[in-house]
Image (cartoon, rainbow, N blue to C red):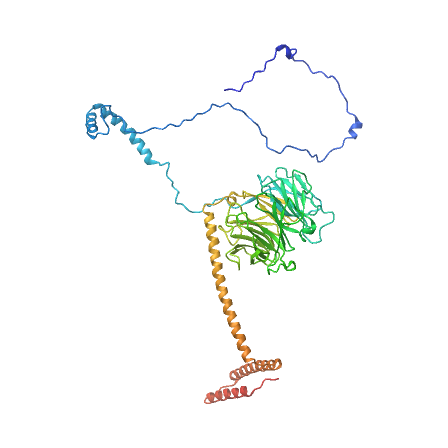
Length: 601
């Protein structure tokens, strides 16, 4: 079938027929230039012109013939027998075979068919198209391409007074947009006139932000709702929690009241896995974790005080810097504190004191990043001070793996969403490190100098190919990593699991050994204390000092006497017959002098 449409129009409706002919050029009018207008001419340099940067799309229609398929079945039964021969009777079939084999045409037909069948059999023996040649190969696929990353885009803060990019969030549908929170985290050092705005960028148009978010206070955190991509949750510097709906504009849709909000900046805000998709929780350095429902943000639905002494005293609570919540473990959440301690909490506990389950201590400063491994939730990553550490919930006294101590402070980190053995860290010297502990454990697989200023935050796209890094001057750099770093390798899950289990087992053995040594030392110390209490000797400080001085000077004096006697022996002339007696007398004299010597006081 062809797509044909006929337009019908009479010839008389076209107008008069045009007849063209050649002729010489004619000058109809000549307008000389006006010098007054030439003086008013102003040259534009540079000239900004908007151009279309999207890809050209076109639509075509093609007439094709429909291909019809039909499946048919065949019942295979023994055939070729005449009607008067019953194939089930063995005697009749044998008699008929003997009769056919005596025919001359039978021999010719078998000879011709034999060569064809031999050719087909040799083809089947040469190549088996169904054979799996590398089925037993279990080695990890190693790509020849070296780990690499390249810069794709740079999103710069449009404000004249630069601020730090403190948090990033990818759009949940398609990852075409990136939300960036801007603020100054230096206490009472924010420059005058600094803007409070944060932006949502469209990666296809990096010159201008797509949406401007206007909070009452600068945003420290900003998170997309995974169920509704139009809703964003932001934690403000003044402790309030704000919510936006991009369909309603740039202004805040919901805002928590100040009296029920945090007292310090909101450093962590995460959406919860709920049926309504409106529940979230936040944490701050004031030592509180609060649960919210964005439909009614007048006050939090629940508050947990991070007091590891379990006395529920806010003045003794540890300040929260980072949060972690895994949807597969809905009752558990983890908090990274500014004291270098990770607190594991259980939300469904009956009392507030029981909600703090255990703690993990291993960093010397604030924990800026805390994230569970997406493939093995029992293992989690922490980034703080000069190292990144990998922990196991089964080993609480120490981490099972850690990086070397860097010269620059570490600021953020995250796991790869597609590879269980890869994670990323950022440093204060502007370097992005990509670690692959299956490939190399002592050094990062790739270190990339992103910018000259400090990197404050990073976020990995869901497919693991793109990484966004935010810097101190508000510049967000978008990087694309090589295929080897964002493609799951063969047997990588099993290898990573074996490494985690091996290191956890090793740490348990070391913990048991240290526990035994501590018990032995404690027992010795207690026995020593008991013996000291029984003896109770009385010493005076002056006597001890005098005795030590006497011993010291005695040792020095005896050494000097020995050196003098040795020197006298070497300088005294030897006489025959008296050598032995003189030597003996000299030794006796030296001993007597040494015995009778007293140290000066």
